[in-house]
Image (cartoon, rainbow, N blue to C red):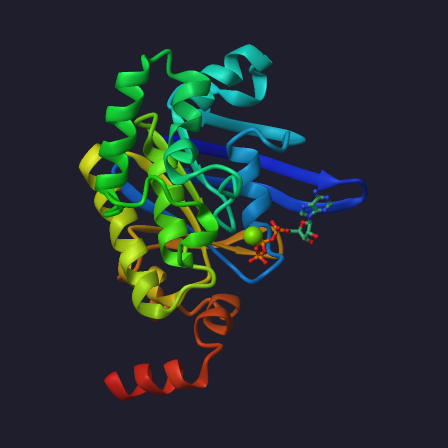
Length: 251
Ligand SMILES: Nc1ncnc2c1ncn2[C@@H]1O[C@H](COP(=O)(O)OP(=O)(O)OP(=O)(O)O)[C@@H](O)[C@H]1O
Ligand SMILES: [Mg+2]
């Protein structure tokens, strides 16, 4: 579980996150949604320690990472898998080496153990035959799956995904969501997903935090979100007239 309390983050005189309070639970898809520029990526980077928050608390279970030294943070990072906005694969390395990268960096594993783990992770995302390929030889959806395989290679307790569906067609997006959902439940991972994809919101949103202009504006889940009376959230959800019409017809 991750608990965020009164978190603030500015860049110079630009205040980006205001007094953020939220909780992310294990075995669940915890979604952070919001318009472009609302602060989702900055919040995610604060959660993994890539940005230092100005004030507040980020508890990984009972450990406050804001008070951690670099060495303590390195220990936490070994429990964390990240799927960055864009897949952020190393273009010069074949798929095998991309997935092996965190294992070689942190794992203390033999070459044989690394090979077994890489093969297992690639199998888990349905890419058994891709290990020798380079990222440029893969489709966008396959690249995301490699990035997921890399993110789970160290058996993380915490998984962070920034816009895992960006640039993918709706069907491939749903497959990626299902993969993240399966992995989250199978291993009881605390998963945090940034998205503005409505299919993801309604498909895998066990817990949803809506960020609006750097504030937590609404919290709930996929079952109650469409009934919300919160105006900024309604404007976000029903930005598409087609979706609005479909939902009104349903009622
Ligand atoms: N390193 C940085 N330095 C200064 N300002 C930043 C930095 N990173 C983000 N910002 C600002 O913080 C605000 C929130 O950006 P952020 O990337 O978190 O938005 P987002 O909700 O992830 O948007 P998107 O959906 O487009 O990815 C923006 O105004 C952005 O310009
Ligand atoms: Mg972003």
